[in-house]
Length: 154
Image 1 (cartoon, rainbow, N blue to C red):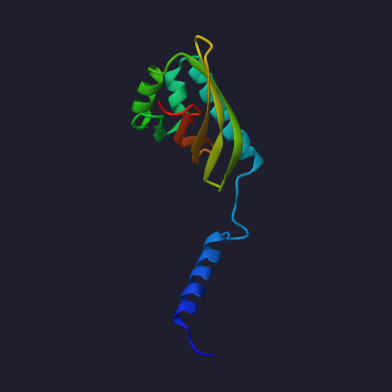
Image 2 (tube, rainbow, N blue to C red):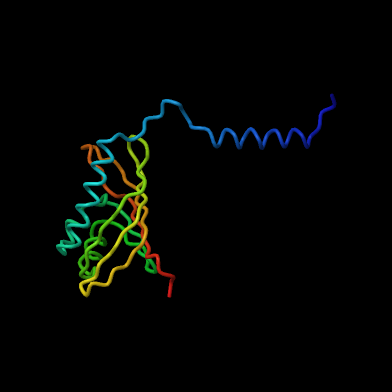
């Protein structure tokens, strides 16, 4: 059989694709039920803090260098910026519904939906994606939080 450079390139790309789609290790540690429960509880703590207009508690859900990516606005990073953001956050209550939480032993993602209810009763549905980082004390804090409403952009 004669060597074909085209066949070699196709084989190389196929092998690279298969390796890229394969798990790194069959024994790679995931997050357990207790981690998922802790993430859910911490996310609920932020909802409670927002409803109570407690900017310090809302910001404390994030890591020290935590980032929020609000819709149509610049990112905010770090505890001082997050406290300022939540201080100026409109009076509202937010209910988060997680669709999927997964990750490794130190980092996880949380994808879901939310409903924000304004003081006047207006409900805004949307979706969110948070990246969580496990702290040395075993707690989970949000490293990155992004969200946007389901309504089309203005």
